[in-house]
Image 1 (tube, rainbow, N blue to C red):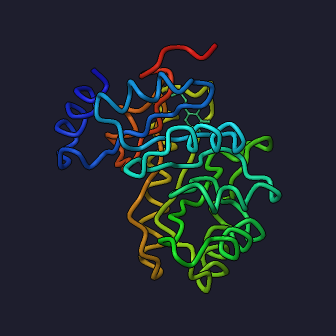
Image 2 (image 1 turned 90 degrees about the horizontal axis):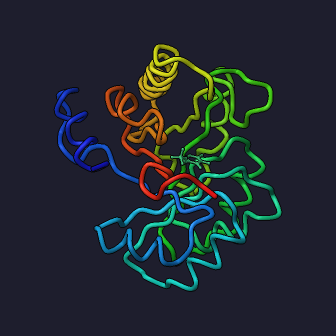
Image 3 (image 1 turned 120 degrees about the horizontal axis):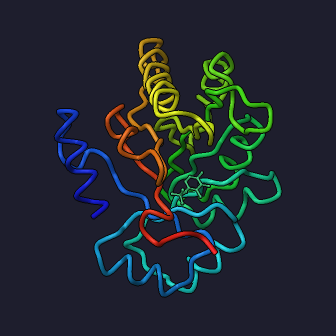
Length: 218
Ligand SMILES: *Cc1c(COP(=O)(O)O)cnc(C)c1O
């Protein structure tokens, strides 16, 4: 059902089918849930807690899966992230980027990175401000074991549909703006269970869905 809904939203927005990728968010879900999702064709999985994620990645040990880290990053966890993940969506400071770069094994493909942007400006929320983004991108340019692919955001929970749309639109505009300044970003990680169709409408290339797939978290 989720896939059909995404496809309809892609059609509605005049987008290429399949250009909005589904990420199954499996934090707090067990191996059985992940196995079932794999059986329906899920390849991309996202987790927010390093320790919990690494246990599952090692238990499942399926090289065809692509693992995305989407949670807040503590510097003492970067080593595990660099070792076990393919993507990180929540990089928001140079210190973390520099550690991930140093700790990424050279025989792996570069870690694929999205910069988390705090579009709504909430104090409690992680992410760089739109104003700080250019500077962070510039600082990260020499980091050869990271490939910066795009931007990620989480809208305010209480926001109305109009404000959520506004938030996605702003992230999309920001991506185009930094690309005009010479960046080459192709990914927009935005949209969760409550707002993913809006996000697809506004150009999301990855939507991160937990409860829409697996039901409410316990
Ligand atoms: C948990 C989480 C999601 C998924 O949330 P749902 O509302 O269950 O779809 C998406 N993105 C981030 C960053 C999360 O932490």
